[in-house]
Image 1 (cartoon, rainbow, N blue to C red):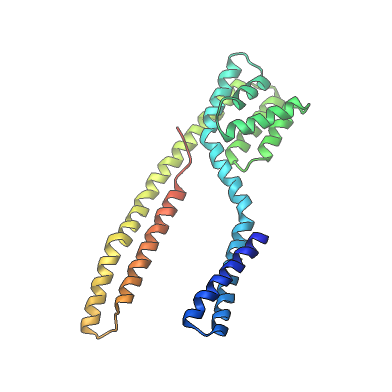
Image 2 (cartoon, helix red, strand yellow):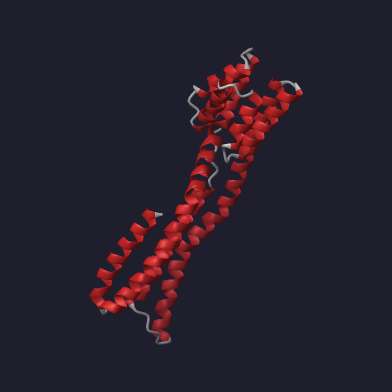
Length: 239
């Protein structure tokens, strides 16, 4: 909260100094207050959303290596290793967030928590829907006395299929986003500048050099936003 206030005060001082160059001091203060308030609201919204964004980012990193962690767990169990020892082995195998999640479950078991309850706690601490689904199926398998090996094999196959579907869906979406990017990178700037030149010559519209520059800057920022959006849509998988 204090960080947002410091940022708002910093922008207020900067905007006031810049505004006094071309405006009287009262007008510069009013403009600085308005812009600083808008920026403060924006940063405050980001500040409130940051923990959730961080949790989702960790969930994405976990899902990147979850399939490999489950394969390791499956190999440990099929080799005759107990589930607790298998959890410890996976936590030390270097699967990033997935190893940390399984390590937390192993720590809870070592502290005296039943292994099913420890797995439920692990799922509750993560925003990953894949981990929650995996954990609930493992817990149901443990409590029903069914085959743990079969459950793990089914989970691995389902997770791999889901990741392939994500990649397939992303490649289909990519065609549309590439088309939009080409429009704003080539077609719209070319046609827009051509129309401006024609209108300024025939209709007598006041098309200034500043308008040309503003048009190109807008097209550039739209391209940057499209690139960022395409990158954010990329599925976080590692097959």
